[in-house]
Image (cartoon, rainbow, N blue to C red; front, side, top):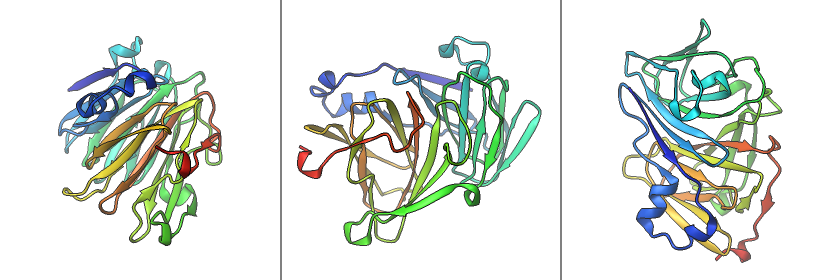
Amino acid sequence: MLTVETRPAVSPFEAKGMDTTALRGAFLGQGLFENGEIRLIYSHYDRMIVGGAVPAGDTLTLDQVKECGTASLLDRRELGVVNVGGPGTVTAAGQSYAMEKGDVLYLGRGLGPVTFAGQGRFYLTSAPAHASLPARLIRLAEAKNFTTGAAETANHRTIYQFIHPEVMESCQLVLGYTKFHGGSVWNTMPAHLHDRRMEAYFYFDLAPEARVFHMMGEPSETRHLVVANEEAVLSPPWSIHCGAGTGSYTFVWAMAGDNVDYKDVEMVAMGDLR
C-alpha cells in the first residue's frame, strides 16, 4: 500500500502567524512507518520526498508516484535508503542489497521499481536527478566521519557522511546521520542557515517517552516542534535547524537544492537568536 501526502511550501511570513497545530501540519512528518505500507511526503521545498517503507517480513514495491508525473519514481529521481530496523533487502534493476541497521543505499536515476523485503524499517529520501549514477551500498565503516562539539556544551557528537561528495557522487542528494556521545543531546549548534537548499531531519532511536525539541524559524522569529521517535521535520531554506533531546537519539540529515557543498552554510550567532 502506498500513501503520499503533498506539503506545499510555506514562506517565513506565513510561519510567523502559525499556531502549534499549523506548524506541525506544515513541517512535521508523523506516522511514516506502518507495517505493510510505504508512506511518503512530497514536499515543494526542492521537491524533496521523505518517507518510510516497512515490509514487516513481506515485500513492498515502490514504483509509480503520481505526484512525480512519471511512470516510475526513479525515472527522473535519485533515492537514498537508510535502514533503521532489522535485517532487510532492497532490490532494484535486478540487483539485491542486504541491509543491516545503519546501512545506507543510494539508487540512481533510471533503475525502475524498488522492492523492500525482510524486517528492515527503511527511511526514504528522494530528490530530482539530472544524470544516471551507479547504485551503491554504503556501510558505516565506509562513511566519512568527524567528531565535533564537547561534553561541556552537551553537543559532543560524530557526524557520518554517506551520500556525500567525499564518499560518492550524487546529483543533488546529500545524506548522513549524527550520533551523540554519552550525555550530549544538542544537535547542530550553533545554528545555521543554507538558503540554497532545504534539509530534512529524521529522528530515530529515541526511547518511547523521549522527545526532541526541534528549533526552527528565522533567527529573529524562532519556533519549535516537539518530535517523537521516527518522525521527520521538513526544514525550509529560510529556517534555522537545531534541537535538543530529553535522552539519547540519532538523526538522519538529508539535503537537496542548488549544490552539494556540505559547508555552504551561514552561521547564526547565539546572540542573534530570538
